[in-house]
Image 1 (cartoon, rainbow, N blue to C red):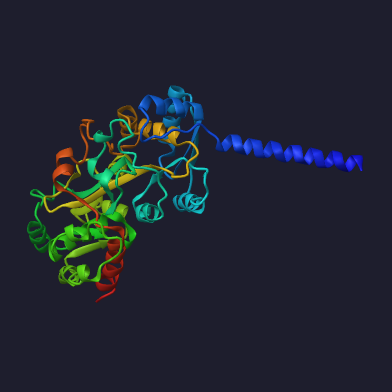
Image 2: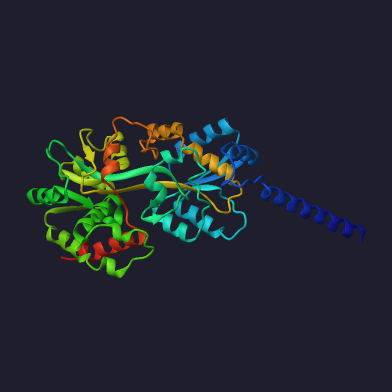
Length: 385
């Protein structure tokens, strides 16, 4: 009986220790980020002592950025670079927990609507992060056509535009009418990828819809496809089908670039960061040029958010401020060629100018319309004779 009592006592003590440890973990120092000064937020972050951050790309950069952060603030970074879908499935599975296991994460365009609909993020953080007004203003407001209301901080900008060979295109088109005329005069020399297989093709179809169906403004803020607003999209599909024998269809973003390099095409839509990476790898000649035409081309970027049930919100805010600082945005660009989210960093020699981005970049319409666009393009253009 004594042995049994001793075992029970040991088990009770062990359980108490586990409970106490869990209580200590959940009782990390907290602060109201909305009313605290930045100095108070940094002090609380250092008291919290750690931040868990999830991404699915740029592993080399994030490892260096995390090491810089730890040296500067003495806050440990638990960096997780994992599969994008797995990352989001994890935070979604934890959304009803009072305290989750993830503090902050990168948010890619295809996940914005889902995560905003599920109310996963803490915020708004726009008035918390220092220099927030120096981060891409439009990306603070809307990402992939979804209104984010300052909950997601701009991390990285990417942009589509027209990529061309200047030895074969002496006067690249600016307006939609000029592009039509160029395609008619140079059959098969303009191409784009199947929009179900890459974003640059999606951007071109997006631009065609803008110019053939009456603009993009009517879609802003919609959370689902409104049938009346897409009733005349057959005009866009007619535009493509009328020129099917004059257009070249490619299978991916990279395939379009390679076909420019091989001389099969002279002009296409491409991503600035994708083209720069292909140039760095020697997969396209360095004379290639790129611009955003007056007719417009879609762009956006990725953002970072603090989870609503993050255990270390202050540390997450300081980490996001660190990643969006001038020093880190310049480092990211120098390491990867990834365009900064900041608008106060003058960068020479980029494929696209800041002026082009400001004047001609288009915001994507909401994600449900993009999904609908892809499906309808495949059905009405690719699958027709």
